[in-house]
Image 1: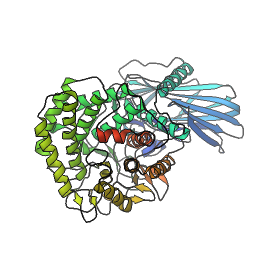
Image 2 (image 1 turned 90 degrees about the vertical axis):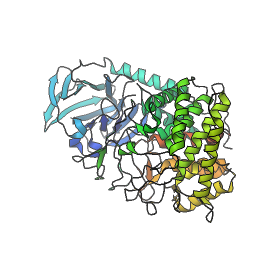
Image 3 (image 1 turned 120 degrees about the vertical axis):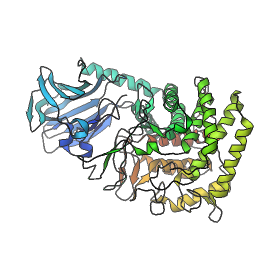
Image 4 (image 1 turned 30 degrees about the vertical axis):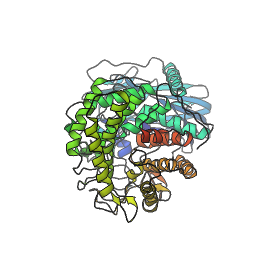
Length: 603
């Protein structure tokens, strides 16, 4: 995959960046209005019943429109490619019954909804050029222009099919064409179904299996095919609270997602994707350890300068709209542990050995030894004061712990005795300064009482055993103070100065972490109930955003969110497998190439 299009329930593509996930949008109605770019195909009738679905096991979207005169199906897909010069969006309208009058409206606006392109008629449709970018619309219907829009009207009868293709190319390059849209659809459907068959989730609950498969398909969709990098989401600035300013650009790849992503892919049976992800990580972080960033562009770019786009009013007037992400310049110590863990897990899983990875790891530890005591911005990338975050220190412990295990398990050379001293010193420091003895809970950062949902990962990381009273006490404290209407907040925005202000929804990954913690401490029924509740929050296509507002009952934040779907996959495996991802992480023991998942009833 190269990019992704977001299609509204009404048949309008309201968000599309070309040619890459992080390129400028040419359809930006999602963050503005129709005048900022969209591609609408829908019946002309005022009364219309709409339903939609993904074709099972695929990323091909079907939207069914039923009017008093008949019914049509709009099929949307992007043919598979790893070539930035050949990106296509195909839309096919098929008559199902009766006769339906249809309308098409194409509003192309490059540069995030601002730049009107130069449009020229062609015998195949039209060509639209703006600076370095060109798109070609291939269609047989008649087109007309009005108010800087391209309009078309056509009628579809039962059995008829009307195809459209929007093809991108650099303006100095020769256009390309999709010769047979139906053949391309067949190839795309076949490829996705063969890919989905590889999913290794053996459980008789069809709803659970469908959720896992859809989540893994979503992760594949968020993978930038040329490099293997996985973006956090294909969108920017979808708000964490309607009308608020917590609006960030998530079209980049985060290091902290790496370990949980690797476990989701490996347990799902997608080893080649896991290997591509590991390779991307090594290329992205190559360089001096002190320059390690928390996120990179999909090809490993480091400069992700943050700007505000003032001509877009924001989703439901939630401003500002941001492009780029200033958090890339923050120091967040947990990413060192994430990187060390994913490279250790890759060895345990018997992915291809890489000697340079171990040399890089030793260099990272030599640097981490000198900086782990420094305050940082933490897992949630606060824009307030730097602090000694407990989770950050815990992941520094993970970094040394996994290096020791790699050296022991694989006979790798390294100063393991010294690493043990560092590991023990970090452990003692956290237990002394990051634990509130009176409340029997770990806290978000040293010297403060606020809690943090990332503390749910303490047992999963292997820092303490699940039956340790401090782990149990932390889970209970988070249930009391951070769980609202059944879902978990990252932290209390009333108690924590994160430099942003305002409220936010419940961060869905944190609720999956609570379910994982329940599994580790033996509260299986509670874990299964929470998992079912989380599945019920998915939209009609089985997709999850970053957060959920329990008051307005709606998804919030960038969408679809990789971290939420990673959490879904891992929690599902934790519930059906006694040796699921949480147990694997706590033991630093990823599934091997020969291991076959053994699934049964939730344990």
